[in-house]
Image (tube, rainbow, N blue to C red; front, side, top):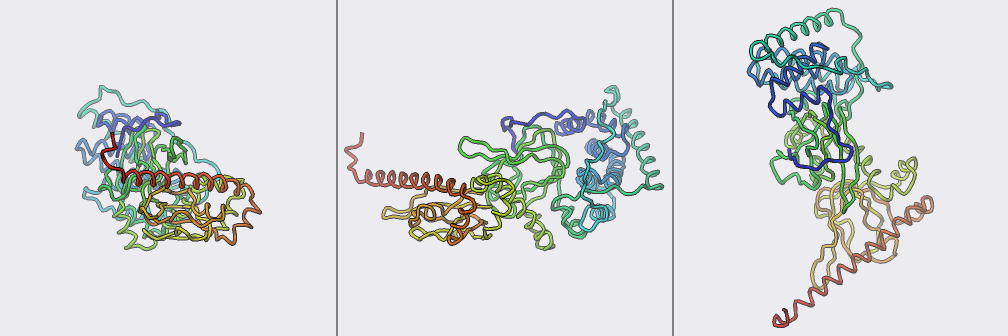
Amino acid sequence: MKTGHPASPGCVLGDSHIDQIITLAYEGELDAALRLAAATVEADPTSPAGLYFCGFALDRKGHRSAAREAFELCVKRAIGAGHLVSSFGFAVAARLGLWFYEVDTNPMLDAIAAAFGKGSPRLQVRTVPPALPVASNVEPLPSTLTDDALIQRVNDILRVAREVSDSMDQAPDEPSPIHPIPFISDLPPASLRHLIEGFDTALTLNNQVVIREGDESDESDGSDGSDQAYFVVHGDFEASRTAGSERTVLARLGAGALFGEMALLSRAPRVASVVACRPSFLLAVQRDGMDSLADFEPVIGAALASHCGRRMVQNLVRTSPILRAVRADERPALIERFVRRVYKPLDSLIEQGDSSAGLHILVSGSVHVGREDEHGYTKIATLGPGDCVGEISLVLRKPANASVQARFPTVTFHLPSEDFQSLIDEYPAILNVLRNLANDRDAETEFIIAQDEIIVDASDIDDTFLV
C-alpha cells in the first residue's frame, strides 16, 4: 500500500484502544500490542478484536499454542456476536490466522458462511444500533510484564476467556441478529465459503492511501492496491475524487463497507482515492482470485455485478451535474428514463459528423474524445464516471464535432434524442446545465482545433526563421 498522502479533511487519528493496538501491531511493537489486546480480553472475554490481536501478536512472537487458542476463541465469539458488522471480518481473519496450524478449519468456514450468508435466519435489518462493546476504555497490562511472565499472564487471561466461552455454549442465549452486509450477505453459504478462502488481511495507519485515483489495474502486481478489493473490518476511510483543483468527498466508509470492487469488474482506472482516517484493519482479495472465484462460482460474479450496479448509481448521483440539477427525491425517477448501455474497449459511442443519437452519462469506465481532420487526429479530452457526452450535438443542434470512443469496458446511461424534449419539459433545470456545458465544451474544442492548426502551420516554416 502507498503512503505519503497529505492529511484529508475529516481524517483524524482515532484514539480507541483498538486503534492503538493496530498502530502498535503495524509498527512491530508486539509486546505492547499484546499487553493492550490481552487487557481488552480481560475486560471483555468475548471481544473478537481483543482475541484476534492476542492471536496476531502471539503468532508473530512464536507462541503458536497460545495463538491458536486466541484465534479459535475469536472465530467462535465473532460468530456468536454477529450483531457487530466487524464480527464477520474478525472471524474470517482469525480463521486465516490458523491457516498454517494443524487445525481443521472447515467447520469454521461452514459456521461463518452459514451465519453471515444468504438465507441465514439471523439476518435482520437493524432498526437500532447495536450495543457498544463492553471494553470501551482499556489500560494495557503493566509494562513490567515481559517475556515468560507476559506470556503466562496472557495464557491466564485466555483460559478465563475459554471458560466464559464454554459456559456460553452450554447455556446459549438466542443468537444475536446480524445486519445484512452488502455483497457478503447476498451470497449463499457455499459461495461465501469460497470467497472467504480468497481473503488476506492488511493493517493501515491514519492518512495511508489504500487506493489512488487514476491507478490502472494492469500497472503492477496489485501490491499497491491497484488490483485489490477491500472489506473494512475496523476503521474509517474517506473516498474522494479530484476534478481540476476541486476535491469532492464521495463517501465515508466504516466497518462492513466494501470498496475497490468496481475497478476489478470494469478493469478501468481507479476513479477515486481511498484514504484511511484512522488506524484500520482490512480484508483484501486480489483481482485474479476474484476472477477465479467468479469462474468457479458464477453466483459470486452475478452478485458482484449486481452490487457494483447499485454502487454505480449511488456514485453517479454524487458526481453527475445532470442528476444534481434536480431534487434528490426526483433522481430515481429521472434515472429510470435512461437505458443502460455497455461498450467494449475501442467501441464508438459517438461518431464525428453524425447527428446526435442522444445523451450519454458515463456510469463506469472511461472514454477518449477526439477529432479527425486533414492534419490528423487531435485528442480533446478524457472523461470518466459522472461526465456526459453527446450534449453538444443534442443541445446546439449541430453534427458532433468530435468522436467518443471507449478506453476500457464502459457503462453509460443513455437517453435517446427522441426522449430529450419530454425530459427537459419535466426537468427544465437540466437544459440549463446541458446548455452551459455544451457551450463551454464547444468553445474548448474549437480552441484546441485552432491551436493544433497553428502548430501544424508553424511546422512548415523554414528552420532559419526560428530563434
